[in-house]
Image 1 (cartoon, rainbow, N blue to C red):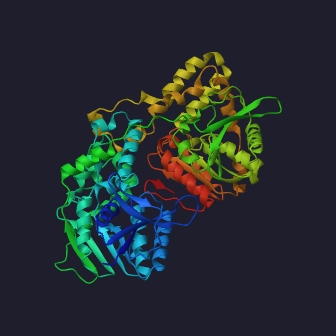
Image 2: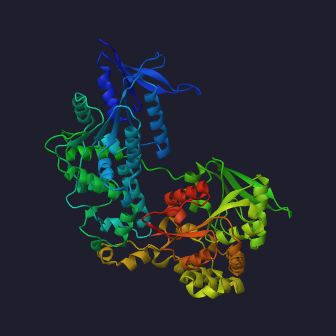
Length: 638
């Protein structure tokens, strides 16, 4: 009996892994995989062998063989570019063989995507995009192929990179973000989602999927699409409710958007792509199965998992221990640069990558606001955290006030010491004004700028657009400058303005009765996790210096230089920012030829803390494309 060699390109995929185990028990089959081995040598074929401990293992001494079949699929952990590279590699290998059959494992929703005209501009998930592009590549490469469109299985559904797991992660973050500003909101209020009523979804066991594929292998037609569906799909709402409960949120389906409030619509907007994917999943299960398989299309039914099995799988896969908070200094080196007056500037530097980000913090504030963002961006960029003169390493409080020009020259000394020729300035609150002053003095150093919750108070022609907080702060700091002995009394009043009503816990009746306007106002409150940090600059020992610094900041005019800014600038602000006037920030952005403004729905003044994941994505796009790429999301207005 001739031996048949089968190449499995992704042996970690649960379906391909199980299929390989089935093949390994057949004496006429040999299973091989591609492995790079040690060093940078080209990928070599390895023969897989059955073992009692691990199920199978690779053998590096595989001889040259001719492959008869290639089995390939997209790895959920890969980026779109990595997925494309792997597909090209698999197809190139197929070209070098003697006409092998190419088997591709896809997902069911791709059939719905491909049935819709491309002119509709259908948005799909990353996973769908990978399978969609791979299907097209398989069809166009010219060899014999078979495409299997499979239902979900628990191992894929709860993969860390899957849309379902990301749904739980987004929901967990969203719950924290909302309850940090409206304590106890989800204890008394459900999250209302406008899901397709009565929608269902196919979820099957890996073993049942593999047994179906073994049956389909008896059909020797090539160029065929095999659709595997469950005999009884699960109700989508029930599945999502189970997932939501794992995050401590009660999910309730409503038939229309009119029954949702501001918080509900905010979450739906953030999850818009995932909700569209769910609608496509529902279309798959409700579409009628033809009585007979047509040319190129074959349908096959498998047993579904039960609701109880789905719940058990959720509990098994989604149990995770909370991550300990990461100190923002982790992985960063503290350094100093000596000034001409023998003073010193403290700064931190670290991270990976070729591009340099310089973080300009708000005056007198701690870098703890950045503790969630720093680990995310330091994996891709080198970063510098710079503290103004007169501050210690932790930059809490303010000891002396200096001009914007002095701060800009100090920053130049830091970059000069590190031999940094080009960078992106990432500036928060008062930082954007300093970034513009630095650019005016040293334009060749700056490649682009990202301004987060920018404050441009001080434009006399736009005083009417200042926030209530900005107006109160100016009068209070003016009083403290004139009468330092009254600082304690003034600070108590300021704290009441800065932290209105102390973020009172939400009762059931109050939560249900809150209007959209009231919810938006409540979400503008300072995050309870940040209240201690917010008050740091307002200590009697440092508030006089802080008052002088803020007055200098407000009086510093940047308007005349705005039209001379020739590098890309992205403003990122929240529609719930009640600290820095984003109405003024939008006007300033409009005065700059290369500036764009991105408004985040539900975003506060502390976007780098609340929405660190979104901001990390935005920064990556600005730096990697030189500001040319248009950032778009359903929860943002450009």
